[in-house]
Length: 299
Image (tube, rainbow, N blue to C red; front, side, top):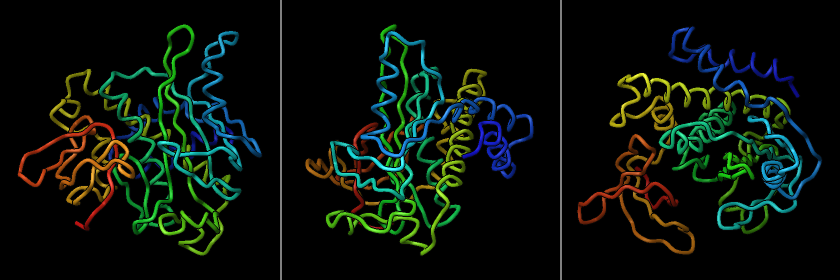
């Protein structure tokens, strides 16, 4: 695995083609530089997020460092939203990132989008057909290759931290029978093994850039720049829209869409806070900021 300095250089290299002037790129990379500042790698854990949660709540230790990462080769107690099964055998990339809550609320809510963008960009290095499904599932031809969980945890002194858990099916060759119709991996799609350490470094570099881009968006908003105006999407959400295939879809929406679907609608936009703007069958519009969707038809 790369050192943190080498990781920052990789992030800078990946930023070369971004459509910003050199000084802006440097600011974005400085904002995101804490990502991967420390990385602990375990052969096996129940869940990576559990370990970070304990560190935040440990009142005998100093405030945990933002940007630290826990990685495991295998998870024994992994789960997705609503305790859904997440198959996490050796061959996948499983990690959790700790991030101090230092953003304004409207921008803090965009951290899951930043994580999703980083994951999708990393997968696209190997499979250009990967897309984001709102909020941040990465899918290839309708099958899920990456899942992300995020939560906010308070330390005993009241300081808040974001926990971002990421699972990517990299070299996974076989899934549980019930997951086979809906899951895929880089290996199953390309037929080639991927170096996991290299892929992890790539992902952390993408996270550095996209977390930094979020902070840069907030900076522009505070400076009164039009790009940060609440009526306009931030550069981060514009990038999300480029990578997503959600707009234009007929979807079913629900807080837990698998067990309690609420209604069907057509997605027409995401707003400046990342909310999903949908048109109901009667022509009225509704915007949702949490929950999840399933695709019903193509665009």
